[in-house]
Structures are given as structure tokens and as C-alpha cells.
Length: 86
Image (cartoon, rainbow, N blue to C red; front, top):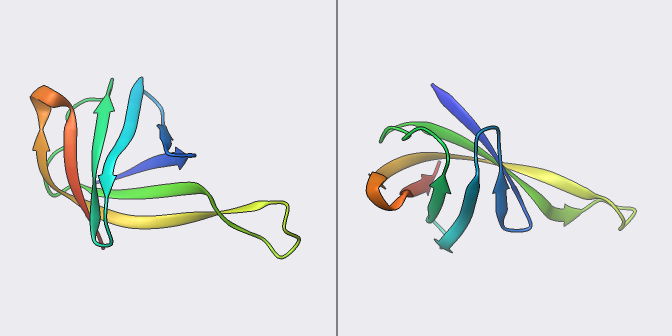
């Protein structure tokens, strides 16, 4: 089962997400804080839709960039997840 999460200016916005943020990120993955969603299982596939990401040729509008990734660990008590980019 896949999940879709949108990130806009570093804040995640998705149905049912009351509070979310990127805790830290690197070239291979990131640590996420998600409150207000049911616990997502380890091994679940996510599709992060990130905006703004890069400008179109007109220089005024932003492309959303989709990043497929997978949950590799979770800390349900602290609402945090470790994900790796696919």
C-alpha cells in the first residue's frame, strides 16, 4: 500500500496530518515527524510530493517533484519515522 504526502516549504500537508516536519535529511533519506496520522508500518512505500522544488523555464512557477521512498524504522511514541529514498 502506498501513501502520498506533500511537502511545501518544509512543512508536510496531507489529509489527516495535524503536525509534521522534516527533522533532518541527507542524500539517502530523512527523518520525519508526523502527528495526527495512524502509525504507518515499517516497509510502507511513500511518495513525497515536494514543492517548491525547482522553477519552470518562465522562472515564476514551481515544479512539484515526486520522491519515492520507503519507511525503514519508526518510533510511534515520538511520532518519528526513518525513510530512505528509492
